[in-house]
Structures are given as C-alpha cells and as structure tokens.
Amino acid sequence: MGSREKRRRKVEQSPRQVRFEDLDSLLRAYGFQVRRPRRGGSHFFYCRGRHVLSVPKKRPHLKEYLVRRALAMLHEIDAEEAREDESRG
Image 1 (cartoon, helix red, strand yellow):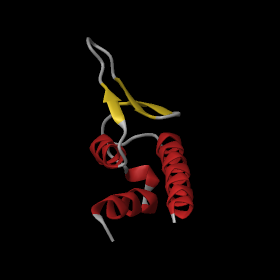
Image 2: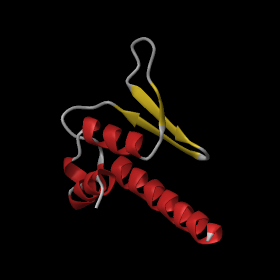
Image 3: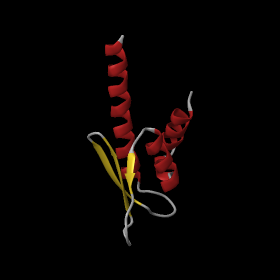
C-alpha cells in the first residue's frame, strides 16, 4: 500500500477530524493543482481535469461535507484510472 492510499484511509476513517493540511497533502498526492488566495482570502481551489474543489482554510478541522465531497472525487478518479489501465491492456 502506497502513501497515497494510507493518507486516504486516514481521512476516510474520521472525516470529522480532518485538518486542512491532511486534505491538502492528499489532494496534491492525487495530482490536483492548487490555486492559493492572493490577498486576504481563505479559500484554496484544487483542480484536476473536470474535478474542482474549493476548500476554506479553517482551524482546527474542516467541515465534514467538504471532506466527503473530496473523497467522492477521489473515488471517481480511482475509477477513471482503473478504466484507463484496463483499456491499455
């Protein structure tokens, strides 16, 4: 099991106790590009293809619905990658 899967499992086990840094590292491991706020903003935007997620940097933990939305996106990405692997051979 790679570190990407370990991070994801940690987030899946407790979606109410996820810190911004944990979700940030997980999304970056999946190849999301990050757009940070320039001045005074608190929302970070994560983009990968058609998947876009806006995450406010809150302390100490993120809202559960944001974490579940991110996990749903990651599930879709895993399914897309599996389909691509099957079609290659």
